[in-house]
Image (cartoon, rainbow, N blue to C red):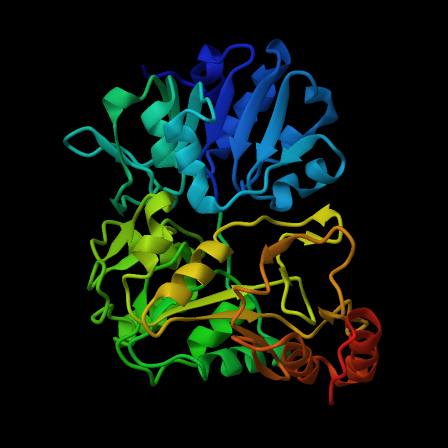
Length: 427
């Protein structure tokens, strides 16, 4: 049923409804604006989500008792609300979320989506973000849609027939853009070091940001690279155009880029629009280690906030303050490890706070979340070098990590290794 406004479309929501919201750059933020408008007339609704764009209004304390956010990944729009206790953070592997829905372990009453205009057969597309939304659509009782003619029509698991949608409104609106970040000497050097670990024929997984872009910028002389990832951004486009990324050696979906969402510039969104070379698939599939490992030479490149001297990787919090989420890091670190010739990299600047804090630390900050365990970590890269921790002892790990820490912290880290861990290291 077509209606004129987001609030009208949302009028079918009831007290105690549990709602899933499509996320990332496809966030149906106009529906979320409408949700903030109608929420005061409802009680105890719950909004489940990943990272959402333009949703800050839902963190208003005035909505307490009416609507509460439950985030499986924390981003800019929800970070303050989670920190202040106005929203909840649920740590979980991204690949597990669809299973919660399909098994019924997580009940869903409704799903909010942003889709492309329907084609001649009545099929809309979820566009640039499939993630767990496909699973939500399979189980939710009510489907509420924002039909946006500016949403790209993508291929894969993205199609939703109009008959599945209970209420919708139409509005042409630009998608949220994420322009490529400026590079620094630090990120460029890290990118160079990561690129040195990449071989011809590797199948890459990487995220968004300065370090992934710096790495991709160093791959112009590589051959036959592939992409099987959770997400990708603009950095891949020049390599696709030049033929460096051609997916020709992949065993799964040969010749195609596999992802579950994309986030970046309008150029990126134009690239994926009606492009059969890019498959947007269910995150339960893209992040399944049994699928990932079937490709040879999987190279998983991820980031971290802090790494301790034994190799434990914190990627979701700064101490007790939740910053992001577990996401798909472990899905791909493990999948890459199981792949024939596969490797994984954790790449991060050596310092934070303008050089005042070492990200390589004797121990993680109290409350810091371990996303990748010391048993899973392979390479750790900073601007100062590469530490290979695979099959290394605690002493060998500490030495390798101290050597890639910022020079001004190395002596103290060596003392801490002895005092905190009983490890005698050479620097």
